[in-house]
Image 1 (cartoon, rainbow, N blue to C red):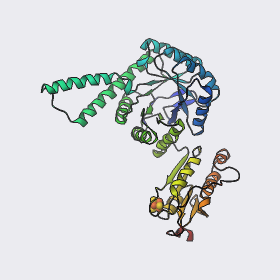
Image 2: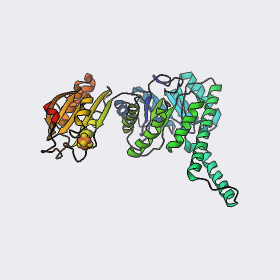
Image 3: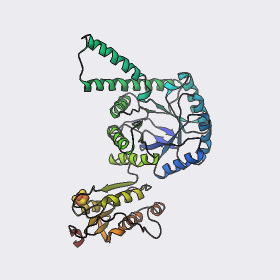
Image 4: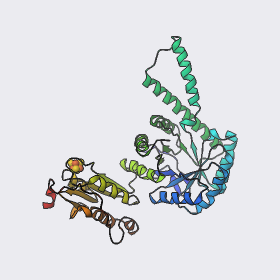
Length: 411
Ligand code: SF4
């Protein structure tokens, strides 16, 4: 059951309530470099990013927002720290949402009040972001640990179980994050401002999960989920999948970002994969491929990677399988909209459960993409399968000339 959150809007995108869970990312360009920023946002739009955030560290960045807004199609969020004047300029420039941590604004609540007034006037939403790294509990924790050591030395305190101590620390930090977020929300509510979403990020998966769960029990404001500073493509994808997966499976979360030390475009497929795995969104390709093994009869790794890459811009829900041999190949391929099952120097192409044809290895890519394109709307079909077909091959030297045979061909 999805948590019942109140609905807000960031530009024309609904967040919370019954709205689909929204996928976000953040640019890595200098925002003042309008050309590069717009180009990156357009690449993000192409792969399905629905809201994008830009860093606004200085006035020049805030002043670039108006021009960027004119050239993109998805709502823009300004990420502001310390100076409320940057938020005010971003709002003047037409930003759709400001992401702030009221705790690090110079002049704290007074600055927040000015931002809220500007947001209300222009119909701009606000993300209140409380990160574990910015919470002073870290200092307090060090202090507490010093006290604990002294008490232990004095024989007053028994040595605690390290796992238990970590759990308590985590709960303490999560509670402080939630308390801070609720306090900032109450400042906004006193000004009759409610267009708020909240993030409670941490680079530690269990801390973030704890904080979001606690907040979800105490407030109905929509939640933006993320594991911050999660790491590179592999590390970050795993941490985000675990953290976001736990929360989403609990019904918590209205927007998500997978943070990766990688090109932001790489964050989007990971985010959609998490949502598809939990059947929360069905946009794009549900991709099945086998890992290959000693029975493999085609170069499944290369073919699968190439097919997946070429389908990265597809938004229409479609199920594609690339399988290495007759053991599981025909079954998975039959269940897919389009499937390739490798066997004895060739591959069998399935479409909607039916065997369409068999093709040699150098035609795998062409055959799969052609069948996929035939099931897509015209605009997407052109992206997947250009006129004249695919002439490159994917997969070399792995196709067996003497394989295990492909009994399915006889049926
Ligand atoms: S489908 Fe065949 S090649 Fe692929 S993992 Fe299974 S047994 Fe191995």
